Length: 385
Ligand SMILES: [Zn+2]
Ligand SMILES: [Zn+2]
Image (cartoon, rainbow, N blue to C red; front, side, top):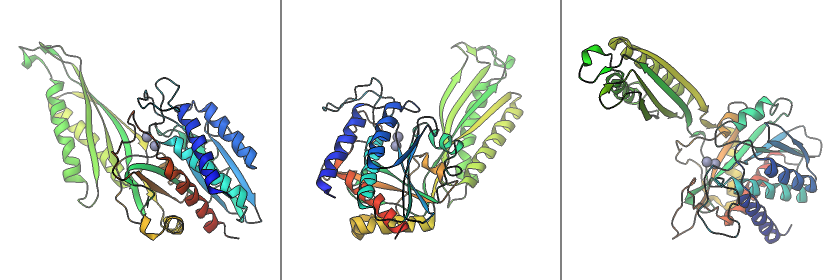
């Protein structure tokens, strides 16, 4: 099929999504738009998986094998500052993470595969809602993705504006971090600021805890592993001349493996519990797992590397890239079935890099077709006739 035509179509789709962004679990129009396009292409579409999520199948030949390709659909809650003819028309909604480009990419793949009809098995496209809050993947799995709607292996990509344009980066093992949130509540005893002997000062205890938490990475996590423990908020119910009764510390942690994730939670609670005990305060400790680490499977990563090399040339593939502590909902899928996640570089030479989640972010449309061809090549390899 005519690649120039397809490129134009993908740009049209991407700009449509960009102009009409919808955030987590609101992706109703986005989802309808995608469903209509895929039905026209001959895909069997099932909507309402994970609320606004959908899957779309194209089955050819006799093989029972099912390969999943995933795109995320939600925008972030931000007012767009960039002036273009396709600027967001929705207030406080913007595709600043490039999920508009991811959807157009996967639709491009859908089109290529439906025209070529050159594979044996089932392609199952997964359009996932609510990636940003880390909730969409879980909702889809809860609604039967991978069970009722079986998938043998799954692939996904994220655009990366800081990496070289048109190059694919991946690695076996951990490529993106976990994200956990914590809330530590310290209940002491308030008093007049002039009479600290009458108090159990939760602020002094909080200060001890904040410092002690930094020893987890330095002294409990193995030097060959990595982790981050960040306290990001500190609230008291005191006033300037009164020692508070209560203090709340909030923050988040990152790591690349389940084991480290468990260690962080365990050590944090031990420190909080024992420091509070030492000073005679009570505590509450909440620790929630928001994002799993994204850990690529070896066999599927080798497939992704091969596909990328076939499409982009060996010189444009980084097969053992640096991992990043950013989190991705795709990591949850990889705790259920094998697969691989890659980064697609979008940095234009001599042009300033605008980071993801910036109100001036604009997807590099020149990489759309490269992503689409990459996914299509995975199918050609994995569902070879
Ligand atoms: Zn994002
Ligand atoms: Zn994103």
